[in-house]
Length: 73
Figure 1 (cartoon, rainbow, N blue to C red):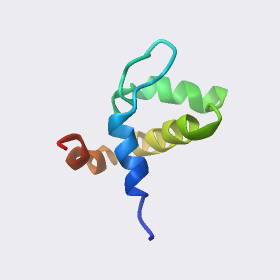
Figure 2 (tube, rainbow, N blue to C red):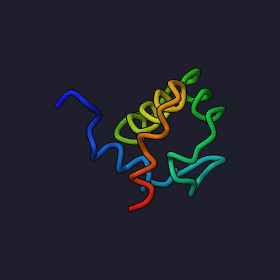
Figure 3 (cartoon, rainbow, N blue to C red):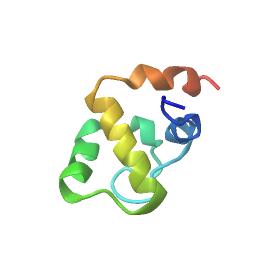
């Protein structure tokens, strides 16, 4: 498959931030400033870090519409 992994995209609209200032916020709803902070300081290890990186890239490239159909489910 050449496109984004649908399972990862689905996690972006389901998974909540487990810690920090935005604890409980769904990852796709995190503000870009928070994602930029992680980009400067370093993303966490593991799946959470990967999801935050993906969300950062989506928001930086104006591709948030990719998640719209998933949010409706």
